[in-house]
Length: 296
Length: 268
Image (tube, rainbow over all chains, first blue to last red; front, side, top):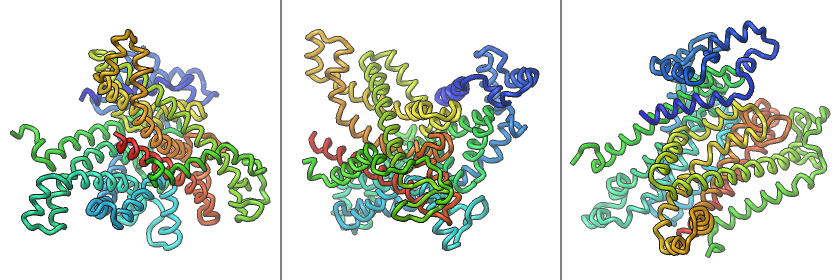
């Protein structure tokens, strides 16, 4: 909660950095003085800073983020309309990341230094190096324009989701795979691993049941930290694939100089990140009973 | 021992090539990266234009080379600013300790509770386009990591004997930090900064791609990618050239960072 208030405060302060007069920036240089005064009053900019801040927090507590200037609608409603699309995309990106990272990391960590390790880690290095802004257009050329397997842009069924999700999830997959490998190598020497092998379990059973479970903790930690990259990466993926989510709303709001909407979008992204990090902390308990809250 | 590390060699070679290209590349091609030639719109790669021409007939190779200079300069400057600001804040907080340390690090926590790239987007959007504003936005996103790193290392190093000895000899806080503590943190900082340069190259390209970074017509890899995207079918090299350039640069700095990290952990 204190973090959430901190994030809200920082978002509020950001808009104070707008150079010059934000009202003139929004209305244009030829705006009538009466219009300027009207909008200034509507936005509450004619009040002292602390009063604006109080009104901002007060509105926030009621879910009121003000009015979009370009779209003439409540910011909270615009965000609520777009938010599910972004969550859908981020979740799909996360699934892509995990589905790719688990086998890559397992192959690499099962036999470090071997051929599988070299291959898997080369793929991972490639995944980290290809930037979103190139991967997206590249996938579009190959799968939409050339092979015509998947739709080019927009939101619809699963088929629409594939390319944006891969664009979003691939670099995260690579990062997670590297972490999983590192962490698998770390648990190799543990006593329980020797015990598991000693009682005659096959290498695959040992790897899956004993090594993987223990090696997942740092991977989950990293996942929480990288959730921010997943959220902000969606801004880029949405722009490339015309995905009607929060990221595109933000970019549209920025080009319209629609500051209340920009503020609302930024705040929503940031608060989502805070919540995801909280959920990551709770996920530790599911994976590792030793850190379960209240468990003795 | 570093020489035996393949990652350092390959990464170092890529980075060195990039630096050389950024330094002298623009002089190797006599073509002006901003010169519009409508007779050469979407020209295929040829001897005159090795990578072809873009939608305004501008030479792609020349723009890539000038873009290398811009990307690298922005990335190095941003990492340098972030490193200096972060080290001073993190180091001072650790030395001051107690309430000041607590207060400063709470502030760092709040900035870090913001996804970094989101902060950069928000700042770039609010401050408007321009190179200085772009660098400020990227620095705002980058400094916290260095602050945390330096604080942690300084807290650990502070208890070491050589620091106690320096303090006993009358070194004040500033001298202690600059002469004795920061050099001890240099290794981990170098690793982080190496990865950081790769990260900032991507972030700058992404901001430029979104139209929030380097303003046209100046060539940056990000705005070249954005400009090329509508013409992917007609002229795929318009997106491929900057895409590969960004990928290679990031690969180079990642490999170098990996290698440096290994070398440092091997030494200790």
